[in-house]
Image (cartoon, rainbow, N blue to C red; front, side, top):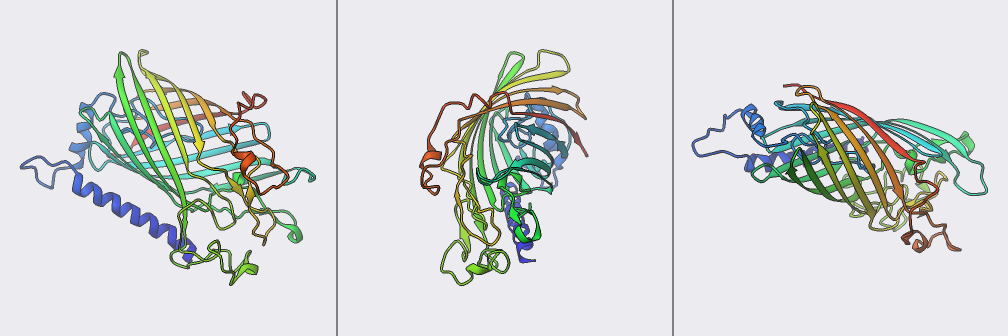
Length: 389
C-alpha cells in the first residue's frame, strides 16, 4: 500500500506546485476580474500564428520521445481540454514494441498547458542473459509509467517554450519468467515501468518562415528514486530479504538523487536536441521533417537476472549516442486532426565488456554508427487529437 501511495502523493505534490505557479502567473489585465473565463484565454491563442504547433507549443505533445517523433501541425483549436492519442509501433531484428500513450491536457490560460499521459505498452523480445545460454522469446504488456508535464509559452507569438516534466514509477518493473524453481527477471527493456521517478526540463523555440515553421528543442532528463515513506528498498521483505540490516544506501534510503531503481538498474541523466521543419504549402496538410539526437551522460547498468541476488553490472548493450531521422504528416482539421510519422533510429556500435564485466569504461566509448543495424530498426506512429470543450 505504501509503495502505491508514494507515487500518487508525489504526483499530487507536483500538480499542486504547477497549479500554484499558474495561479500567481496567470495573465490579468488592469480591471479584469478573477471570474474571466478560461475559454477567453484559450481563444486568445488563435491570435498567434501556428498556435497549436506540436512539441512544446500550445497544442503539442509535450516533446518527442527517444524515436524523435513529435507532432508538428495545426493541432486542435478552441478547446480547454484536449485528448491526444499517438500509438507508436517499433521493431528491430529481435524485438518489437507497441506503446499507446493517452494524453489529456488542460489549458489554464492561452499560453499554458498542463497534461497527464497514461501509456499502455506491449513488448516482445529475445532474451539471452549470457552468451552460453539459449535465447528465449518473452512478451509483456500493461500500463507503464504515468507522466505529467507543464508548458508555458512566452513571447509575442508564443515562440519560446519551457516545459517541466515528471514521470511516476507506476509501471511494474520486477516481471519474472521461467519455472517456479528458476524464475529470472526480464531485462529492463521488457519491463512495463522503470522503477524510477523522472524529471525533465525542455526549452523550445519556433520560427515562422514562408509556408512553414522551424522548431528547435533541447531537453535534459534526470531520473531519481525515493522511498521517503518507508525509508528502505521496496523488496527488502521479499526478493531481497537476504540483504536486510545491511548497512547500505542501496537498501535503506529516503532519496537517491540518481537513477538507480531497487533492483539495481541504473539510468543515467541524458541530454537531447531535436529540430523539425513543418511545411504547410499543401492545403489541408502539414508535412514535417526532423532530426533528433540524444546522449546519456553516463553508462547504464542492468540488474542481475537472478531473483534474490543484487548484483548490477554495466549494460553490454549500452548506446553512447543515438540519432533519429523523422518524417511526419498531419491531416489538418480543426476538431479532429490525424498525424502519421515514421522514424529511422541510428545508434553507435555497442562495445563488449572487458575481462572485468563490472568495468564501465568499454561501454562509455563513443564509436561510429552500427551500420549492420541501420535500416533494421524503425518506428511508425498513427494518432489523432480532439477536444472535449
